Image (cartoon, rainbow, N blue to C red; front, side, top):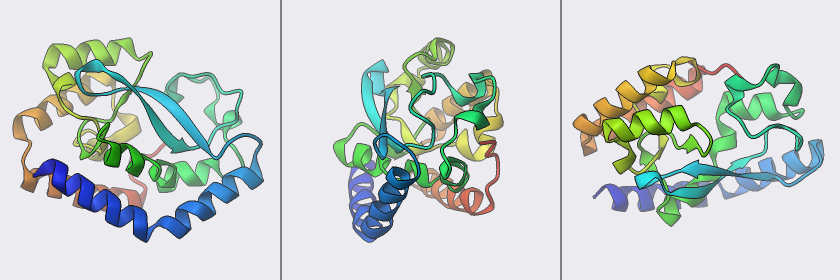
Length: 186
């Protein structure tokens, strides 16, 4: 049932948002050099690496590390990068990853390939068995502000509590947090 919901919502949202997605892609291209999409190596289910698309919000010369590890992340943002990140519009291309089956609507956010500490803690907690999500329990309980052990604790709680109703709750809370920009630092 979860996969069916993922496919339905991603296809419906992709069709509904086709024009805004095309407009954002055009704005990214017009305001900075480089492609509109950034394909990031991410860790998926069973620690398998997959390519996750995002609208590019950072300059092309940005190191491939988590934003919080950059000395001054603001200096790497494109002219519309801050807006894309704070509004979470940079995440829209991940609808493709959901359709493809690399991601789900709800699950732990996919780690960067080089976040070994996060990957190891998730593997120890069994969270690596989950398909990563566009949003998750950790996202609505702190997002960028959470230390890695707290993220893993919340991901493990999601693993234990996962259900259709819990996913709906997380999706509703995500919409609320995104609209109010709660927990977004960059």
